[in-house]
Image 1 (cartoon, rainbow, N blue to C red):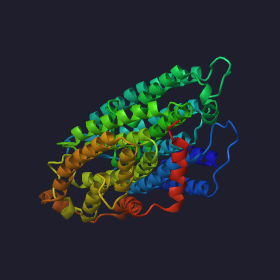
Image 2 (tube, rainbow, N blue to C red; image 1 turned 45 degrees about the vertical axis):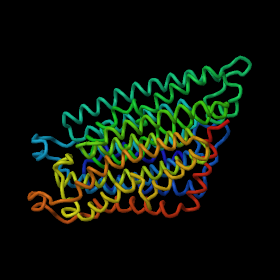
Image 3 (cartoon, helix red, strand yellow; image 1 turned 45 degrees about the horizontal axis):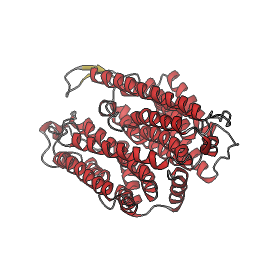
Image 4 (tube, rainbow, N blue to C red; image 1 turned 120 degrees about the horizontal axis):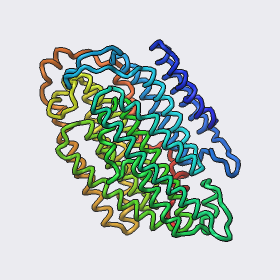
Length: 492
């Protein structure tokens, strides 16, 4: 099953590079997404049993993030059909930027998307820390051409920034793996393989100073890819310049891959009795990320960059949740699901707005509700969801984290957490509501056409899922979340 989920997207991605006609390539994209979703559902029905010491396995945390990735990719692939139809492969004059650009070949776009899915699946299934490192680095290489899709100088700058900063981070994570190997080679212990289960089983014998150093390096390395401040600087540029369908996957799925890398390290640290120390580190980084994001969201003039900084904020929320431990770990995992669905819906709605207004400026976009009624409703609903307003899912998951912080005697953390949430709400409300209200320009009114279901169907489906999770968490998902929380509990 795991081999199917990893190899099918990889093989189809290689095939996409060879196909010359657009239609077969687009059919291949959606078909692969459907096959991957079917395989993920099969894994829910019958989770593959791995042999002891296996490098690939699907435990509760891996299956959770695999499911999110598969669902988002299916929605993004459907949306991509309409997006690629709008993006004529020939040259055209861009009305916002005033330059003539040529779209990247569609074969590269589709092939890299499918390879991206394959590598993200490998991340979810990797239980060997070396293989996990390779898979996370591979997601960087597969997604870089997607960011450069528009061939503009800002896209090029964002791509290089993404590659350079994430490569530095992943190099530090590699050093963290070396330190972890030293910690697992203590005298009298022998050499313990860097497999999650083996390290957890021998955690009490690991050399603690080396283990602490390894964790710090992994936090900095994978935290860079995750978008935790102050290592987040690649994220706003990449998410802003990438096509909206790619931004949805970067924010909703890719960041979760790095988060899972941190969680694997935290599992070993908790088993070694250092969970409280590691949790404190994550709480600090999480609060810093929320504060930095809130400041940059205030007065942000680019609505895609605003959504990117919102992702930095929510990665901070995840770090605070797992750092606190207890019930907050469950809240963080639920929030990871809610954030992925809500942020992907917002980025897809932003793509519709960008296609109609040809501008990413919050000052030039007015009257979205009048010009694009369905997209306008999705834009407002997405804003309410992502800022934790009831009855959407993020409200429930953030409430769980806040309640847990007070229950654990961390009232100061809970109060600061609420204040930073309010800061982000005010910053986003100022821009989102101003864009939704008012009268659209004459050009937008003149060019206004029917909103195609390929453009609004996927964000509608994602938004409905976020709303449903705010009302009721289905029993299978609740069981999986509790299983993942037990596996990731960081307290000794």
